[in-house]
Image (tube, rainbow, N blue to C red; front, side):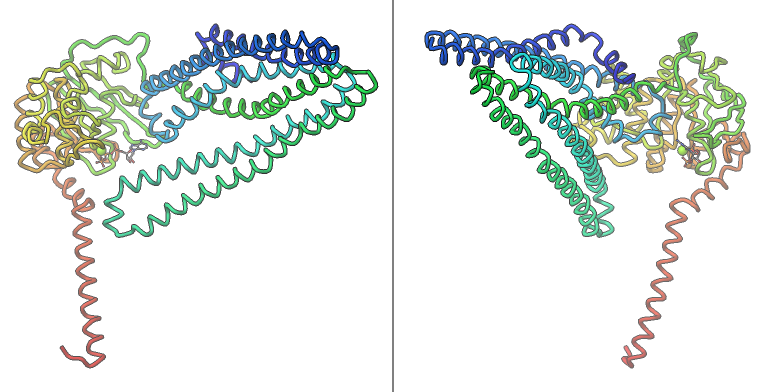
Amino acid sequence: MATFRRMMRTFLRGHWIALSLSLLLAVTTTALGLAVPWFIRGAVDKALVGGRTDLLVVYAAAILAVAALRMAAAFGRRVVSGRVSLAVETEMRDRLFSHLTTLGFDFYMRSQTGQLMSRAIADVRAVRMFLAYGLVFLITHTITLLSVTAILFFLQPRLAAVSLIPMPFILVTARAFSRRLHPSLWAVQQRIAELTAVAEERITGIRVIKAFAIEDQQQATFALASDQIYRQNLEAAGIRSRYIPLIGVMPSLSLIIILLYGGRMVVAGDLTLGSLIAFNAYVMLLIWPMRMLGMLVSWAERAIAAGERVLEVLDERPTVTDRSTAADLSRLRGAIEFRNVTFAHDDVPVINGISLRIESGETVALVGPTGCGKTTLAHLIPRFYDPTTGGVLVDGIDLRDTTLASLRSQIGLVDQDPFLFSLSVRDNIRYGQPDASEDAVAAAAAAAAADDFIRALPAGYDTVIGERGVTLSGGQRQRLALARALLIDPRILILDDATSSVDAETEARIVDALSGLRGSRTTVIVAHRPSTVMLADRVVLLEAGSIRQVGTPREVPWQEILVADAEVGLQGQLAAAHRAAAEQDARRAVTARLAAGDTGATP
Ligand SMILES: Nc1ncnc2c1ncn2[C@@H]1O[C@H](COP(=O)(O)OP(=O)(O)OP(=O)(O)O)[C@@H](O)[C@H]1O
Ligand SMILES: [Mg+2]
């Protein structure tokens, strides 16, 4: 209930007037509906039985007027609640998204993308449907229920008491029905989501599937997932086929009672014929609200569960935020200092007490075996995480005393696996500075040795990349990401293995361009190539989250790390695979020769 109240407060803020109006119109529609059987009662008793046929027209006109008013009220309610509902949904989704953008990397590492998507779409939808429609129905159906019961007791208390007996069973059965059905429907949704994920991954990974020639096996996996959906749907259909007819037949019990018991009353003169007919009509009016109230309980439960999931995301507090006392950084000189920094990912220590000063304008290469913490250390500079202990300073100011925007707008970062958006090449390059001029974009591209290949693309800088556009090679992607980082003319440039997929010649051009551009810019390079290491003023050799040695490229024995890395890396594996394949070939040749010898067939 607390969640529910909080949901109403959080999501319905600013919509109370519209919601009240929608409720008012709904109640009006309901109340008008209640008038019709009353008119029929009058028509039967006064006009037909009483013999005043002239009154028939009056009753007919009254019913017509009520019908017209109901139509107007129902129209108004739909317009109003439709608007509220859509506005609530849009607001919730926008709020969720804008909140998501404030959350840090730790949150995204903990969460699954699919989960977040389903919260943003399905849960938001469930909440808005209930808040905007379910609530109104809950109230109007309750009003109908109470007022119809009152009218029935007014018309004939004994008949009311008896004929209403089957009604609660409709409510209970409807509740049981929706209790069974919803888990089943939810499971269907879940299976469909899984199938979609399977299909998406298989389509994205089609190269791997074809390369290993495992299409049949993949087809079987898919068919299995597909079959599960079929079964789950079949189960839901089974539940429907059992409950819906049952619920449908229950009102007949009331009708039988009214006919038998009420009929006798009419004959005995305890009830007018008109009242009997009206009675019947009122009982009919109860059926739908009874069914709906039974279902609304589950509906509410689901909406609350969905609302909880949405609120859970909204309750996430970003771990890295601007302090209230944080000040904007002015243009940086670019000196960086790690002061006794330790850092742990989920309590697993990754950086173990690093102290390091990087001077303004200096180029520093971070070298070390894979997994030693190079990327993590580099990510502390734009404050993607805060250190567990110690501090990171730029120009002598602790990062936690600066505003994130003023810090990050002066740092250019090219990630190990750069992400590009499904936009044109130009828009990707100027992603960090959308108003950059054509010349600035071209200059950044040239500095990243990307200008040539971009001009050779089908539509040059207007070529769209990504799913709906051209596919770029790994090296091309890296160069675009580099151009994107260079465009903002950062004071600190961080290149995390940013040229690993670029050929040596192109890398040399990038290196040239970078050293020309570098000027007083501070550059931190995570390096795997000798040429890149040689570019650095100093090399920081890392080992398991600590600094092993710092010095000029000539002083630090970085070669042994890079060579060792290559051994355990791809090249090493390839060499091992070659050796294994050669051995196998040799064995096969021997076996074949022996087999041939055994049959006595000499080649
Ligand atoms: N998000 C994370 N959650 C938990 N552990 C992590 C996370 N990111 C990295 N690690 C761990 O932290 C350690 C350092 O990772 P990091 O990415 O900094 O290594 P690296 O030196 O950049 O390696 P590489 O050369 O392969 O890029 C690794 O042991 C890694 O498994
Ligand atoms: Mg790394």
